[in-house]
Length: 198
Image (cartoon, rainbow, N blue to C red; front, side, top):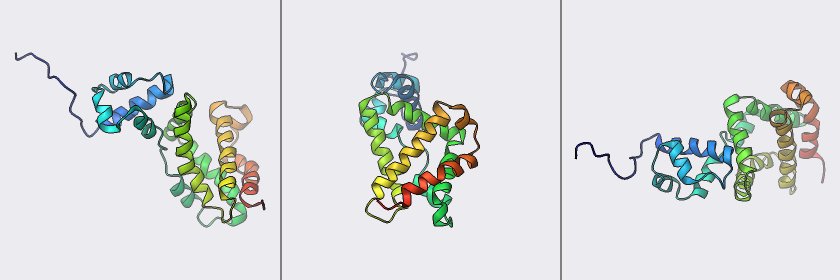
C-alpha cells in the first residue's frame, strides 16, 4: 500500500520538545491548567500525545517546565546590583526588576505564567514553588540575617503588586510612569524590607 500513512507517533525532532512547551504555555494560559488537556496540547503542537509523556513524563511534569522562568533571577540581580551602594540596593532592585518586565518577549512569558498559575490550585502550587526556588532565593541572598526569607518574600510581594498594577491592571499613573520614577518612589520601601531591624 504505497499511499498508506505512517502509523505511530511522529518522530521527535530537536524542536519537538520546545513546540510542545510553546503549545502548553499557550493553552495553559488561555484555558487554565485543568481544561488544557494533553490531547489538545499535542494537537496544538502537531505531535502524538505519547510524545508529551516521552519528554515530560506527565501533564504535571509539562506544567512544571511550562512555568519555568524565562530568566535567571540570581544572575539578573547579581549583574544589576554589582557595585551598587548598600543604601541604594532597594531602588536599584526595583529598576532591575522593571527592566526585565519592560522587555516584551519576557513580559509576555511572565504574564502567561501568572495567568496559568492563577488558573488552578495545582498550577498555583507549582508556580509558588518555582518563585520560592528562584526569585525569593535570589533576593534572600541579599540579606545576611535570620529574617532573610521573610524579607525576601516581602520584596517579592511588593514587586508582584507593582507588576500587576503596571502590566496587568494597567493603573494609569503606574503604567505611564518611567522606570526611574517608580524606582525612586518604591525603592525606599524595598530598602526598608531589606534592612530595617526585625
